[in-house]
Image 1 (cartoon, rainbow, N blue to C red):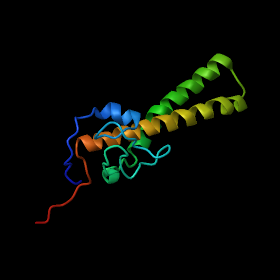
Image 2: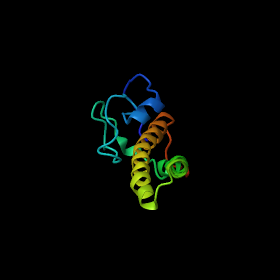
Image 3: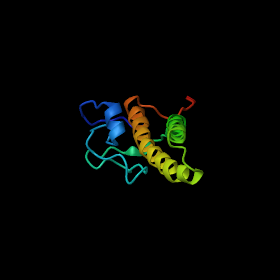
Image 4: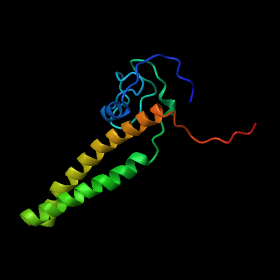
Length: 127
């Protein structure tokens, strides 16, 4: 990752990441649409080329949201005893909304932490 020459006050990686803002200035937007990362910050011009969250957010979402959705489905079943089609009508949209919302937040969080800790792909030094 190229050295950052700009002088900006340090931003809290957790709050900027969860809000989907630039990890350097905290003002610009990190995402273009729902999950696509912008090429650069609209406020400070930070190049987001370093941002590679990979499959990390998806793994966290599967583990955490899966627990919530199964808990909700079990609560819904034992409280109301609905037929299967009603489970699909109620639980599926709940799962999709919670997954997409948390996926965006966790992706922003991992990118902000990657910027804060100057994390990058491992390289072998062959000098």
